[in-house]
Length: 361
Ligand code: GN1
Ligand code: MG
Image (cartoon, rainbow, N blue to C red):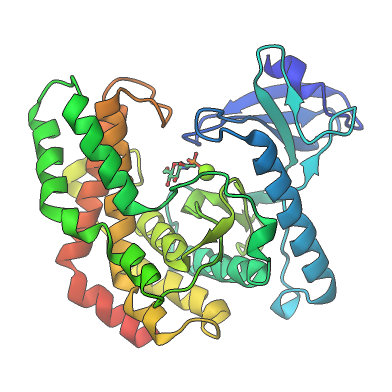
């Protein structure tokens, strides 16, 4: 179907290759290459996760128009390059193509001369990941909340994930292997962590702001010549939330040198020096809008987002792999064990990480 889908989006040159990119866990993604060497991204939106794909596309348009307008009057510091993925229209001017089976396909511009990585390549790279996230937060900071639809209710609401986990645990028919027992135990001893950010939000300590929602390291595009961050892609979850979800996600993904897909759980660790570099890049752009309460919750956020993602993968394993794409049975369990090991490593380095946060101010 990807062949037929790719031809719904008018381009200047002939399509010569359509290649699947398997890095994402939700949508199905292809890189389409044209005869003139231009490329674009073709995606089949996951309707089970994003039940209203039209709203996702409307949000992306709202986002891009806002950012493009803003950059035209106030470009980033020091003439830095910054790019925003463009939604490509179908022949009849729509944001997506609905295939005969009812699946939604969209096309987005490919950001030229850029690439991303699944793990941090150096402290300079980590600094740039942080800088990119700070620049992104600045660019959307004045995007009015009422212009963005909630495309994924409950996203990053950790107590909600815990409640769902409890339901799944009651009904699951998964074999109680040593690893599953370990996971159940891991969650049981950390349940109390889940509400830390939502409690701070409810008590008015942390404000809602527009966020990316999924700024993991491989969504931060780097210029292939300068090595600078020039875009954050994957805009499906841009909506009001806590910047802590984003900061936590940036750190949990970029400070894990073995990456999300390793099977070497015992060697998984959180690398504080990479965290320091990310925070310094981030704060260069974001220090002016962060409050003391924001800083106070940074450590909690880093630990929580690793725990939360582990919990989400683990729940999905118990539920039978209904949310995240799994390449084999046990894949989501392995991913959960990686995030749990990362969470443990964060906990064991709490004083070092807290000191890095304090020194970054
Ligand atoms: C999912 O599809 P992808 O890889 O961009 C997930 C994120 C997770 C991430 C972990 C909408 O993102 O929340 O952090 O996997 N996205 C959604 O790799 O659930
Ligand atoms: Mg995503």
